[in-house]
Image 1 (cartoon, rainbow, N blue to C red):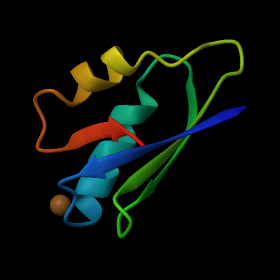
Image 2 (cartoon, rainbow, N blue to C red):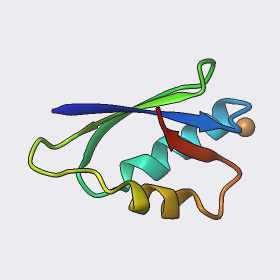
Image 3 (cartoon, helix red, strand yellow):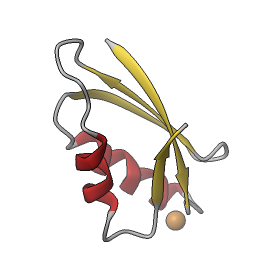
Image 4 (tube, protein in one colour):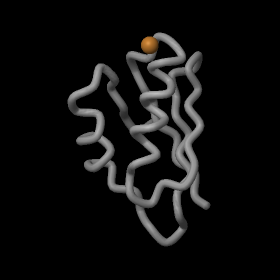
Length: 71
Ligand SMILES: [Cu+2]
């Protein structure tokens, strides 16, 4: 598995954390997600055979209150 870490802005509580987690889990190629609320980060573990499409991730967050960006 490959790990990519993103910065996530706008998370305030456990509900936000869960929302970000579930949004990332739906992205193609994603196998495991660990959202770090305090640090404002998300560690995404993905399939070695698939390169994550950051445009897809950005679209998934487009209508949310959270801003995700590569670190
Ligand atoms: Cu919240």
